[in-house]
Amino acid sequence: MLVVMQAQATEDQVRAVCQKIESLGYRAHSMPGAQRTAIGITGNKSEVESGTLEEMPGVQEVIRVTKPYKLVSRDTKPDNTIIKFPAAHANGSPVTIGGPALAIVAGPCAIENRDQAFAVAERVHRAGAQFFRGGAYKPRTSPYSFQGLGEEGLRIMADIRQQFGMKIITEAIDHESLDLVEEYADMIQIGARNMQNFSLLKRAGRARKPVLLKRGMSATLEEFLMAAEYIMSEGNYNVALCERGVRTFADHTRNTLDLSVVPAVQRLSHLPILVDPSHGTGKRNKVTPLSRAAVAVGADGLMVEVHNQPDQAMSDGPQSLFPDQFDTLMEQVRQIAAVVGRTVPAIGVSEPVAASK
Image (spheres, rainbow, N blue to C red):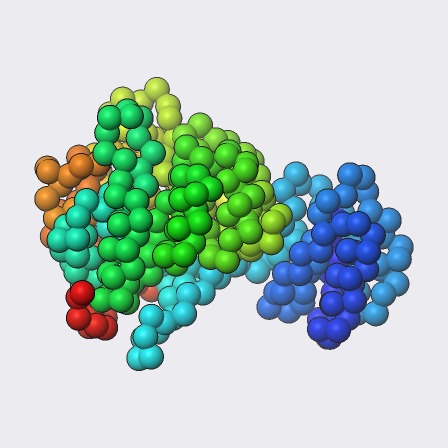
């Protein structure tokens, strides 16, 4: 069920409706919009009796949400969600995921050491990336592959944020690592392998940081949105989605990047959606063309792997761009973004904010 408040409803009236919903044994999720506030109701096993709520001051209507995902749906929130991150320093500007500005996330697959991480960060920052990605915890197919530096990697990324002002996005693979990621990072990534790890999704929903949810390797659109619903149902409404390719019969790429899911998500949900062409293709020479296509189709941002020495990378070297290639990608994306009414940070938008430790 969904309670739609009147445009002129006061905060006290919204609060009273939420309290009434809670008194009935349900959960209330207040989601302010540009024109009015909607209050989602979850926890109900059957249809909620709407008569009492409809009569409350400030309520315009109570409607039934027919989709299995409630909070994720545009029925609950017609306006696009924009996730806002505060400026890293006094003279900086806040950054967003969603809205007219494209979110550019770049960095190595894994944090291997301080020198490697800072070398990549300096280049992607200079090219215009607002977010730095890097894995401190790596869920690998083989138990003998590099599993990440753990908390040491998180500390390195925190130093990169201090140096360059970029926001940090990194993956949590279980409850223990999520506790540390929440402490160090600006955004918690839930990877494709954990898209239906419902216990981890609920824990992310109780986190104080925004969540980037990657699509599972064989997930349908509805399963993807239902995974986001798990997070939002716990009270964390700052969720962004990420298409990273699905497994098909194709063997010319690592995965099949499903760009059709971008407009499909945007039709059904208010959540922003990014595209990861690195995992989506697994081939360096395909990353830039698919990045161009992702921006053209309406994605809210890109997540691109960049390495200063990809041939020596400990994880996903074949799909990682050289820094010069990332510069070219940004130049091309900037031109396409202007055509579709989006903006991209200019090259060299800001200087490092502090000396490296």
